[in-house]
Image (tube, rainbow, N blue to C red; front, side, top):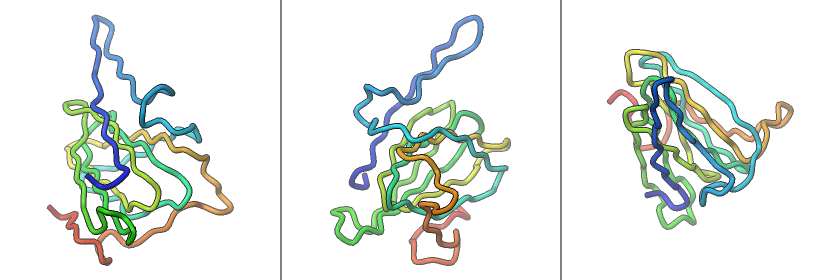
Length: 148
C-alpha cells in the first residue's frame, strides 16, 4: 500500500425500505478535517486522470456503477516511491479510499452504467487558485495503462 493511503471497507445496511451506507465519520481514524463533499461521474469507459493536490487529502468512494481507482506515488522522499495501487469500487465491494497529498490519482468507469463518485476533501475547492496539478491520462511517466 502506498504510504499514507488508507482503505475502509464500507457496509451496506439493507432493510425493507432500501439501503444505508455510512461513508466517513468524524470519529473514523482516517478523518482529518472537513473541507467539502462533492459528487462527480464518469460514463462507461471514460478516464478521469491524472492529478494530485499539494494541500488537500481526498476520500473517494463509488456509490453507483463501478470505478477503477488508481494511485501513483511520485513523492521522491516516500518509502513507497514509484508504487501503484489499484482498486475496484462499487456497491458490490464498497470501500472508502483515503488519498494523501501529492499522490497522483484518477479513475475509470469500468461498468456498463455511469459511475457516481463521492469525494470528501479536507479543504474547500478554491476556484481562483485550484489545488490541482494535472498530467495527461496517457502521455506521462506514470507506469499505468488505463486501457486494461
